Image: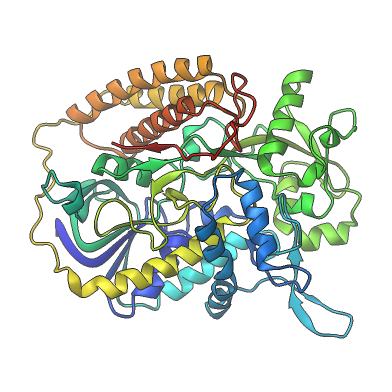
Length: 530
């Protein structure tokens, strides 16, 4: 029971991982590994929607142009076009899986998808299921998943590291499986597989304030780096402009669709301020809005700004934003009558493990899809509602590539079991808790929305000390959930700072006071090699 075999192991249970599992399960034995309950992940909390061209006034070219404009010159044109052109079939597949998108009735009595508009988009092209699109997608995929006898769901399992063959030739390196910490039974098991897929999401928990769930600790990025994969553009961390500011609210995002339907950002005195920062005002790209809010908060010494949609009718608000309405009401805020206190928070990791258009990484038989991957789609800034689209499109591309290659690779023979003969049970858990808290505060204070080289170097100095402490702790004590996540977060933090220090300009999500302008010439991705 300490070693299991699968045709494919999918690490992560969000839109990317689950849709890939469903596409592969007809002809292969699949394991889906999730750190917590299957449902818990970033997809579940995605409120906005999926950006796809449906309106007759819209076009593929417009969607491509908007995406590239938001990406500030670093999007891969081929990848952007591929993703946008495959959007409709992704929606058709979701509808077939049972996702019920919000619809509207036209004057002639016909019904069609209701489309909203979010920051950076020049047209209404965001399909949604009220204001809980991610929940609708996640629940529908899970419902489909449970009908497949070929899929084993390993909940409450945390992957420690990938297993590769012993070779010094990077061109011959192959992923053979992974070591997994079974949290329920407090043991480590070995999983062998023909193919392994990283669909582990982002790393928002590296920051003190984030819209991400607790599981977003950069595990896939860290594991891939330790195995020998390159990463790219880790400096581009998207801060969502509007998360609920309340002492009892934890990581609740206020969907950008509110601003798409006319919500206004205001200062405590009720005045608007976005006209001073961008012609599109509240519908400017997220990096512009987040930076504007951050500047106003620091300029005035205030704790938050306010998002006001109370000029819309109560019926409209309750119909289009039931989740936001009910959640805010729990905290004593009636958004039909008063504005919502909001602050920016870390939201999306635009960089990640380098992967091609099929999801292949630098290591044979190892794939990366979704937020954990860097494909060139998002460039220096992700446009709103392109993330779920990416998950679905690249899951399908990876599924075709893996299915065509199944017969090329036999199942790996018996792999070495996990060896913990030299470690003992920890009696110093306080070290992990302290280092976890310090890391997140250092990243928030020094590697946030506005940066300087001095702040970045200060952060790197502290991160390297923390990394040494964590490595020493990992070498001497038995693994635990918090230790493994901290080990990954410290590494991801270092990759973010290294990338940020190497970019001598301000571009997209990376804004530094030392280099406030964009460099001229052809912009380059930041690529780090282990």
